[in-house]
Image 1 (cartoon, one colour):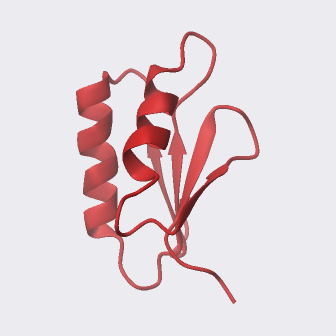
Image 2 (image 1 turned 30 degrees about the horizontal axis):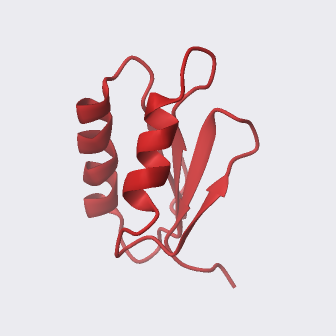
Length: 82
């Protein structure tokens, strides 16, 4: 985990726990953080992925959402990296 990218793993969490975890990472994100990588998994169902996309797509700190390098992750882009 580098300074620019924070990571949160939601495996084993229910929807409420996952929301609390992601909100906590968003609160801790400082100016050097430009991306939060949310690992939600994809094998069993899409509840956590859907919650991330629905809840954080319009969050005031989130510029946009991006699909990750695999289907089990979503990146919350907080600012552009130049």
